[in-house]
Amino acid sequence: MPEKNGTRNRTNRRGFLESIGTTSVAGGLAAILAQRDIVQPVAAASATDRSVFAVDGAADPDATFPQSVASGGPTPSGVILWTRIAPSAVVSEEPVGVQVATDDDFEDAVYEGTVPADRLSSAHDYTVKVDLDGALESDRRYYYRFVYDGVATRTGRCRTLPAAGASPDSLSFAVLTCQDYQNGYYGAYRHIAAEDVDFVVHLGDFIYESADGAYTSPTTDITDGRDIDLPSGAALAESLADFRTLYRTYKGNEFLQEGLEQHTVIHGWDDHEIGNNRYWDDEANAPVLPDTDGGEQPERAMEITADGIQAWVEYVPARVEFDPNESALQDQLRLWRDLQFGDLVDLTVTDERLYRDGPPCGDARITCTEEEAQGRTMLGREQKQYFKEWLTESDAVWSVWANEVLTMPLTIGDNWSQIELLHDSWDGFQHERWELMQHVADVDPRNFVVLTGDLHASLAGHVKAGYGEIEPLETYDRIGVELMTPAVTSVNAADVIDFPGDWDDDALAELTKEQNDHLEYVDWHQHGYAVVEFTRDHCTYTVYGVDKDADPRDAERSTLARYRTPDGDLALTEL
Image 1 (tube, rainbow, N blue to C red):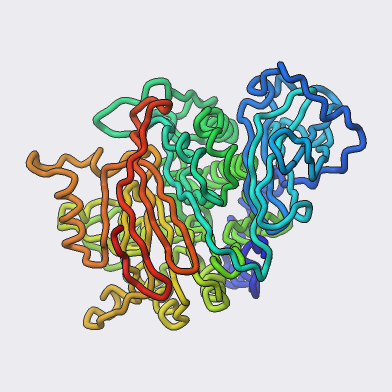
Image 2: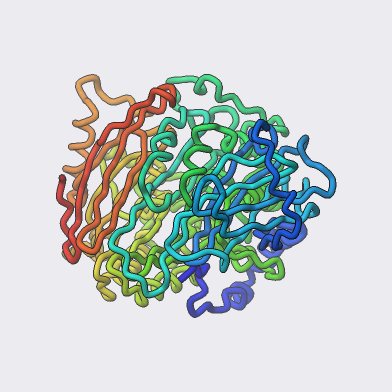
């Protein structure tokens, strides 16, 4: 089935919000977005004029398409294709051509369409999103390109999902997260472009809102050549022009382009697409952006959040639900959805930022009993119900959760407990985690796998029905595995914490495992990505290290770890 945008047994969240009196300011934020003509994918019209596809082979595609191409939102019968036209290249009344073929010479074209000239607008920053759902065959890889005024983009590749009821033998994902442009180079993307995987799953922090190196290593400067000047002059993005500048910068990188050109991406998001550690304040009925100037003032936070959402929708080809007629933001925009890869994998992507409560105990970092409080939520009432129903109905060999932040607890001594990241993860929502994991245990899916990013580390461990946080005297069984991908470039723990001189990276990993017996593998210091392969017999997790400080043309890839979980078995076996 295609991405269903979380529509299984959809309940009326708006009525719930109204019943607790939270629609006034939330409706204001939704109203801001409703007034902005948020770009939606269009179905290209059939091409009647073949001259649209005439290509000047000598033309430079980068001058017309400076952000190249990308694809996302796969269904069994299509994908969403994306590009952007340089404003200086826009020609009045000129449509944009779209071609899809089974060969990279486009001699065997299976789809040719045009996007009307009036869809190319500064209102959408000249981005183009074409929805081909219903136009392609299932479980196929295709080549595609856009053509504009005689210039063709570089050729991209895209892939559709298997048909409902299909029984694929295997499925593979490259899993990515956290790619701060100012903290390193994108050598990892050069290797991702060459990976023989079916899809890319991006777990969020596709951009960082910073232009001043706010989230880079405190011991180094911004990476050479990675300076960014925001139109507002601010250090952190605070306007639509700022967010658009960030996306144009990130997607203008040639190595990131290579990776996006070669693979269809299933996108989630995390906090930095808008603001670090963002959350929803029920009392103020508004988002909160703790690090952003003015981000704790409801009206200002709403404007900045709307700016970030608009830019994300413009630049990310994700199949999400947007209904401008809804009066509450949480009803208007829905990122949570699920995808089925035949009977092999059922994947859900959750939104862990738009609904979440603030950090427990405010800024307290050492001890905090509020993290165990009932009623605190990361998913929100309706999304949590959706998640439970998704898992109950999942009958695939592998039920897989594309999850933003670490679900397993992480405890590393008194000093380490001061790391704020942990309260920003599921450790800050312990009762809701316990509730969800109890549901997993009750449903007992054939195999439960969690794919996670955010922490800028690679981890593999055992998901349990509980960890003693709610009922300390209970012993809880294993119910699945969690596999974390490292950051592509973003600063990691080994970069920022000054450990004693006789410690090395292996010692840190061993200490982590000693104090967290559910962990089998830990690496705090390498950057890169992970590949997760599912077959009917096993799930294999491979972590690759790629030096973020090396020239991307020369950056080598090393295998950091490889673990396997057999079908029907909760083991993690090192290969």
